Image 1 (cartoon, rainbow, N blue to C red):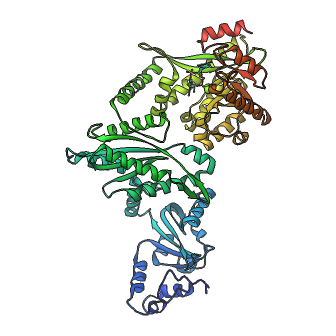
Image 2: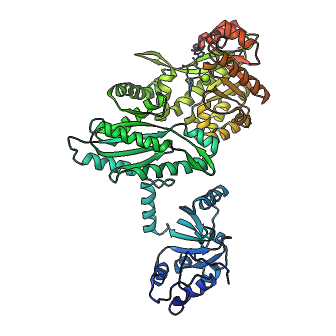
Image 3: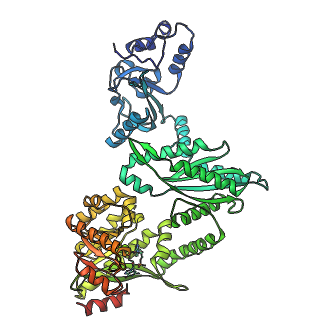
Length: 595
Ligand code: C2E
Ligand code: MG
Ligand code: MG
């Protein structure tokens, strides 16, 4: 007999005895409280409901030992009552979830008293099946957890599965807010309805500023809790006819219907912004955040989901670019810029096929001697109408459209062909730096493809360095870490590009599999004249030396900057002072001249 007294779960032991034997013995075992004397009281009805629900109900003690079950528990698990009672809940466990999954689940129960989600369990006949599981901590009057209640819906039963599918296809698993599919539906409801002349419907794309920094500094579980809290704060303040949706990581969309004037909408957005900026207290830590907002309105800025969302996101991007923590309404001028951008994007696909892309090379020289030790490969687009286009004009689109993946491989292959060609012709052997975008890092075939090309062109990995910007590395720390680790194990070197602009810390990077820091041009430019920059750069250089990282100064333009850096421990210098990025032929000339 258990000594647990679950007063919150008020079942009447005595009234159960006659007609529901299986419940009474189990309830007795669990010492359920006897608070009602009425045979047909609320507790009786509740028990009857629990007995007849298709969901399995388990009550366990704090160690997971099963103390109480309903009939569905035996039906779904395949174990009989005797086998379940007294056994540990782990009897149902499959090996489909890892340790991390369970750690997160228990963290959440400990914090909020509740967890809900999909989980794979194993039946007695060893068949693994999908469940929708809700776990509640049962607390006593003092708030102490005394037991756990688990409700399991068998998703392998078709109807349940469809219901859960419906739930997860329209609601975001983390915050419980409606998701993108639901937003699509809501927008079509809005556009199908009649709009009065005097009021408009507004779509607000809301993105948390520097959210990746929060994840990086406080951990993903903290970031998740923050997103849940943000969702609650917003939804708690909306009128019945307004809605908030979570689209992806830190992107939310709000719909405000029938807003009488722009001023009213601005007031609403300011109120939401104040709410979001209020400090958060999570896991004993306090943080404050800001957000940026992009706004489109129906019907003026679009007729359907695609137009309205695209324009709200264009406005959001402009808000981010203009310093964050602000809102922007979509405008036609933004649109013209975006249209040109989208047009270029469409042409980019052809350009790759038509071989209109070029790789330029910018030399990197040894500090002090000026000897060429390396070169950075920088892509260009030889556009028939606009001439040579800089990567800043098309890489962002290539990233959004996914074209960066084929383009990225095209660039790597081109560089490898050049390395092989130069080796075959006995030209000087130097190191080549290749830029990788964060989208390439998350692509699962990246390492395999690089290795294939390495074999194909017989490349020595020691001659190749991959660069990723500091901010991209901080966006996807775990993935970048593992890709870098594997590439490093194969003999490639890794660099953090534009260092100093992305909020990482040197102590953090000390544990990262990286060999080189490229100090951003903004620190190097006029370094001889600017005290502050000089101090920061000097500190970065000496700390990098301490933790064993090599350094490259980017954007060296003047003799004064060169002379300043000559006095420092910076390893390589790169910039217009030595050479602009040049095409293959000119690069070959440079190598021969300066060898
Ligand atoms: P990055 O990797 O930091 O490359 C350095 C950029 O600084 C290059 O711009 C280079 O031309 C420019 N630069 C070098 N020295 C100087 C200087 O002394 N003064 C000034 N004002 N600028 C200098 P570029 O070629 O326009 O490339 C811009 C960015 O586009 C690159 O920055 C890199 O992030 C990205 N990028 C370039 N090629 C590729 C590529 O093949 N793949 C990917 N994913 N991104 C690329
Ligand atoms: Mg670079
Ligand atoms: Mg750079």
